[in-house]
Amino acid sequence: MTKKHFFVTSLQLSLVLFSMLFVSCGVKQTKTIVSADPWKTMQRIIDSVKGPSFRDKIYVITDFGAQSGGVFDNTQAFKKAIQNCAKNGGGKVLVPSGKYFTGPIHLEDNVNLHLEEGAEILFSTNSSDYPIVHTSWEGTELMNYSPLIYAYQKTNVAVTGKGILNGQANNENWWWWCSKKEYGWKEGKPNQNDPLNRLRLIAMAEEGVPVSERVFGEGHYLRPNFVEFFDCKNVLLKDVKIVNAPFWVVHPIKSSNVIIDGITVESHGPNNDGCDPEYSKNVIIKNCTFNTGDDCIAIKSGRDADGRRVAMKSENIVVQNCKMIDGHGGVVIGSEISGGVRNVFVENCIMDSPNLDRAIRIKTNSNRGGLIENVYVRNLEVGQVKEAVLKLNMFYEVYGAKPGTFIPQIQNIFLENITVKDGGMYGILAKGYKESPIKNVTLKNVKIIKVKEAYSIENLEGLTLIDTYINGVLAESPKN
Image (cartoon, rainbow, N blue to C red; front, side):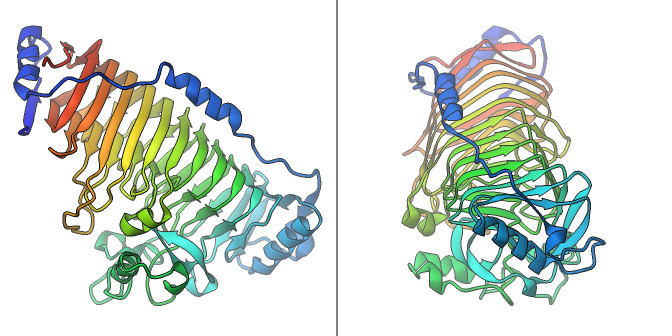
């Protein structure tokens, strides 16, 4: 099928003309595959996720030598408080009001790191303060700098409270490593794209080099994640404000039963995704605000060969009552998505910013592969987006990647009760493969205005439109 465009230039455009435009696109109509009531499935997922519980015992970091003021190095004080708490059966490690400078914080089983209102943790910007640990960088596992807050193979862990986690990243540190001048990089300075850095990591993964031998860190300029729960169970991140991250902000990887509730992310650096669940199952993200330099929420499952090696889906992801401001996308799936994603539920969110590019986005390519299916979205209020309300792209380009042989699949995408005040360039922007078309996309009770071009569609089978209006015109489902 060739690419077709659909222009809606007037509220008075006749329904007959609109229907003719759909017929001309030649999109084949197939039955949309949707479970009888996906929202009951979502509720069952929510009911199954139980937050961690902790002993009613408090360990105050100042009792272990911590000093406020933002100058004294409290790394050992945090370590002592957390280890003492864990050794005695767990509880709450309390950070009182004040500013506390530290290196990385490593959580232990049954520990809740709790920040009182008025507490701010300032993380070191000296990369040598971060030891090498088993972590992940853009969907590829490696040995690299410790995340700023890190839990590895832990159970019953939390970071809570009304305080602030401040990564202190800016154009003078961390951000310029990305190699972009707008983030402080200058000609002649090293960066992540030097041959022995990002490219070497990707080559190692493609060659099947064991993760323990993919050692990076100092001199390789691969920035650390901010908050990472790696292979953890029963996780809670609640109420904290997170600012100025070096890289991905919240990263649950290979984790299950994760609740992210009421956090605020304000971080406009490169690759500053707000939340990236990866290879993770039963994740609830609710009541959060994302104001980011990249995707607000991006669901992932590994990059290329490394994603196929791990072979874990991200599944049963619920997003509720969140606000998305700046970002490349509101809720995004991909692009590191080789393991596949299924059962994503998004409801009751507000998305609005002149700097928000898309509302719902799926991005993949023929290096990634993977199956993305069963994405249900309802009750969105979208103020303004720049490019598209819904973007489904199997040809996502990143770092100049060449086409591969792992053709992705996208199917069963359902949007209901969506209002869009300023839709930007496209209502739907979809590009699939001829041999692997996007399948079964339904819009029900969707109202989009101020969109320049209603659709740009290539290789999509089964587009169903029910009570959907674009620029005031009722859109009909395409005919066979």
